[in-house]
Image (cartoon, rainbow over all chains, first blue to last red; front, top):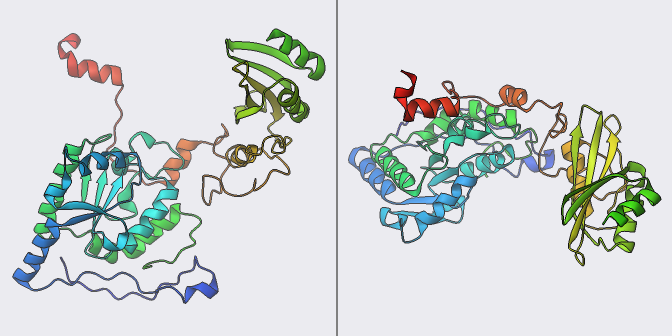
Length: 209
Length: 177
């Protein structure tokens, strides 16, 4: 991962009432600072072998995660397991279409996750809107709002495809190319602008919960 | 059931009885009598269960057609009661005092169609959408595609095929030759 640093002004948190602004952090996200050489390689290997998924099924595609957890597909053998909270998770699986209402929770959950964190976008809807191409309430590209490390196409993809996607994600992490978190930090203002364009009742802090 | 149609016609100027199935019929009534009719159906005719309330945007006629579906569990018969209200000023009596759960449907009507039911609890609160500042989206004059194109970024390169022609070319390429 890159170690580039960007200085940004404190966040205004204008969506919050005045009396609540001081209760929340005003520091924008920072890029990850990698360790030296083989130590970072070792970290990446370890990260790729223990993918902890946030248990938040954001759309209909999340139904495919259930068979993965049970004995037939058994994702635990790949070091993948679901966790209950964003704080414990390293992988966010966007499970298909995201309505604006869900997007608000997606952004919130993504920002709550500890780094290094990775996003897997599942299904056609996350890529180009899929069947919701003319919907008044469904975004068409999730990568405009949060960074995506791996896409898995299909409507919906079968569990085998998900396993293949996770294997791909592992390769990316292992090679140190899972740059999603850094992209988010680097282009934070752009992401925030896109998010606020569609989430019109923005009543939460700008970053970091 | 035609006796019921006659009684409704006599008492409330109902018309257009339509027997959709053996256990399902519909009838139209004047919108001003919605509450009277539903109260009478509930108390006198055994239609004690309100299954559903929704609306249809009949933009050609300039009206919203409200539909109240009620059910008589003794006779196992459902009745859809239709009532037209004008689109320019869509207001109708609330029926939440007849069936408490009606307020949820009426809140939905307010958000999705802009139909107001004065006195209905929490009718002005957001129901499904958050921060919606456009026309109510279930009105047919709301252009969903135009809104979607203007609001949500699109990934270039998406193409659409006619399913029949595409599958024909895939499965029977020799047919075109």
